[in-house]
Image 1 (tube, rainbow, N blue to C red):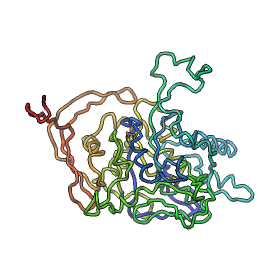
Image 2: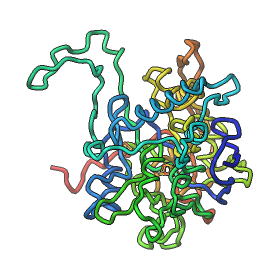
Image 3: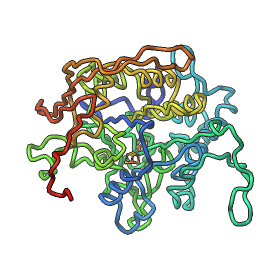
Image 4: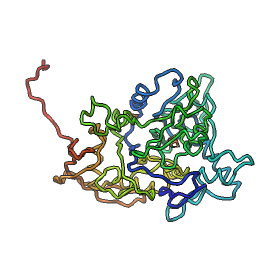
Amino acid sequence: MGKVYNWQINRDMSYPYEGKYPERQFAAVFNINRCIACQTCTMACKSTWTFSKGQELMWWNNVETKPYGGYPQYWDVKLLNLMQKAHDRQEKSMTWNGDDEYNGMTIFEAAEKEKTENGQSRVLGYLPEDREWTKPNIGEDVSPPKTTKKDKMGYITDPIKLPEHKSFFFYLQRICNHCTYPACLAACPRKAIYKRDEDGVVLIDQERCRGYRKCVEACPYKKAMYNGQTKISEKCIACYPRLEGQDGHITPDGVSVETRCMSSCVGKIRMQGLVKMNQDGLWKKDEENPIYWMIQKEKVALPLYPQFGTEPNIFYIPPRWAPRAYLTQMFGPGVEQAIDRYTAPSRELMAIMQLFRAQQEVIFKFKIKKGPKIYEKEVILSDGSTKGLSVYNDTVIGYNEQGKECVRTTVEEPMYERPGIHFNSI
Ligand code: SF4
Ligand code: SF4
């Protein structure tokens, strides 16, 4: 095993290959606070890429209800349990220190420490059973505890007692994270999985794959899937023809456009970008890029289970109403800070939030034209203190790959009054 630097756990970690970084990395921010679980993203992806024989149970994009939903079922609970057992055996703990450094073992380090005699496994993981892939929507909108009693007909006989606010759920939108240190790639004995130099998209070479399912076992997010018809594995391809600007219908000038799941998002919760990377594995400073601004500058969006160690590139603005301990296990130690920054957004963040789903082209740069103050309020932060929030009606402008303006909008949504006599007026 080599050593690579993982900025999400703030330390070097073991990985089977040397670090190699793309010029630009596919990355996205999902704002959990706004998702309505309409599953439009799920169906947009399905109808584009996974509608063939053998792909019936394959959902490259899914939206599950946490804490009880999961596709495949219990994917995160199962892996966290495996990790906990490995930590117990090694007398270690899965904790973070005050410098936001992860003290525990990643899935690569746990496998290294616990190597069996035949030493085959490079990644701690498990292969879900077939039935675990069959109910992508299981647990949708469920918040009662699992122990709730049901009668023979399945009706709850022991409903939640007041106060209701003690129960919670939120929607978790999931696609392949196009990880910087992909576990699927690390585990593949055929070297059939690769990460593209131009955009960091992780792909499975369909010619080389022999369907050993090592990637399915290793991916901690369970986003590599097996096709029983073709007998090879498949995964999200980040709609790379769209990233390459190949869809002449949408982009006659050949600029990058966002993926199908992003651009179809009804709740306007998703924004995708391509961020510049250095050869040391860190992101190049680029404060004009809205994705860079949200993740590196404001730290309002966090990776999913950073302790797994794959350095995922999908980032989440955590839900404000969910218990902090649960969220910290899921998104790492920056949860309170991220929620506070979202609750009382800076002027720049407020402007960037307006760019979510205001266009299909990938935004590489944003600019703000200052407008008048329109609103003032005191907001309560996580520690109970208050902070003044001022909202300005700024204009935010987004620029595409070629530096051309592709979107212009304001913080306050403009209102249009229809003329009195209208063609469909009675
Ligand atoms: S999320 Fe899973 S399938 Fe996607 S790159 Fe990471 S390890 Fe591979
Ligand atoms: S389309 Fe958007 S709002 Fe609807 S489920 Fe998907 S992520 Fe959530």
